[in-house]
Image 1 (cartoon, rainbow, N blue to C red):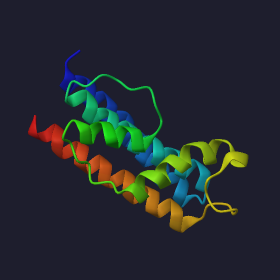
Image 2: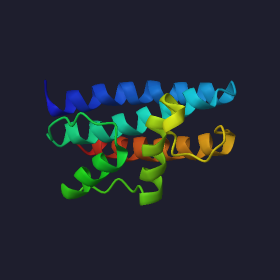
Image 3: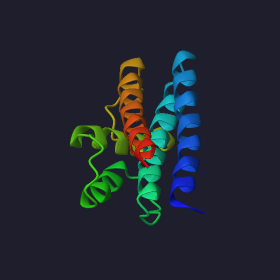
Length: 132
């Protein structure tokens, strides 16, 4: 497969995760919304890697993927706070006792923030793919 084809495949999964994150939030399902926002962000970053011909990194850590992209001179525009939040989502939404989030269940505000991060990352990936 070509790098462009792989990137587009990653993006199709990204779009699905983002749609599910929105639907879950609308239904008041915060953990599924967070999980899907995190997955959308992760997959958008992997789409960028694929587009640039970078090898697949089997990780769920957003910070690691962002740093790898930065090392390849690709700035996706996520702050350390953004990556820290998204990295806390993967573990906390699947394994609550390991949560890095405050000692409360996540609410609408945190879900909206994570959706915004995912949407920004997806927009960056779309722009990069459109250039190729």
